[in-house]
Amino acid sequence: MAERNFFDFAKHIPVAGYAYGVVRGVAYRLADDREEAKHSLEMDLADLNPLRMPRNLVNSLVNSTCNLDKGIWIGRRSLGNQPYSLTFSPGSDVYHWCIQIDGIIYELDKLKNQIVINIISEENNPTTYQSYCRRFSWTMLTREPSSVSKSTLQDYAESFKQYNYQLILSSNNTVNCQFFVKYMFAKATNISTERAAGIIYTIIPNILF
Image (cartoon, rainbow, N blue to C red; front, side, top):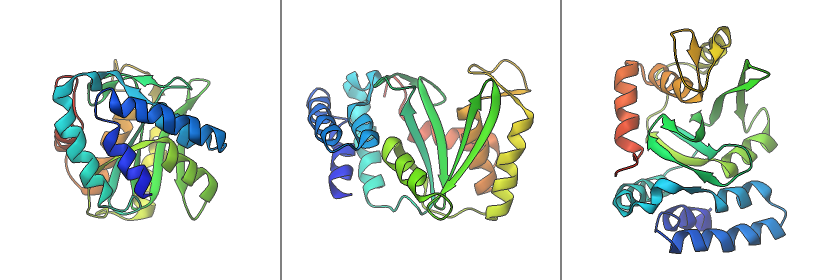
């Protein structure tokens, strides 16, 4: 865990961080840890902008002092098996998102254009839970626990099955993974979706800084 925290800090240093990731990725691939290897090689092309580095480093330091199974975290990973992503602004990026609330991961995905809601925890599926924890890059939104019950959050997450999936939202009846994360964060903290979006925009860097 200490080495993972150090890497998540160092990877945001332009050039040197990516070189470290390549070496780390090869080492984990040889050890047959594919999820950690993919995480090592992942790169947000926006990180080539050095103005993003201060906020990335601060986030990494904060994340390293907290337990992933406590509080609320955004998880992001590149799409498919390719290592490159690009952030324009939080929610407008080439990433897949999920959210972890008090040690339970909630994910909106699609299967043949049908929405699938995955709810994963150490208790109900430890192998998949650990795989997600390694594969995704995690950013803490708050140390505070959820303001509502676990069952309320699970029912709320399942309610998103009624919508249609669309990568870029075009109507009130379509959702994507970023939309889902924002609404789950708002529900868990008992705040408006506008305020939830504002917090996410404050914490997650955009393409400029």
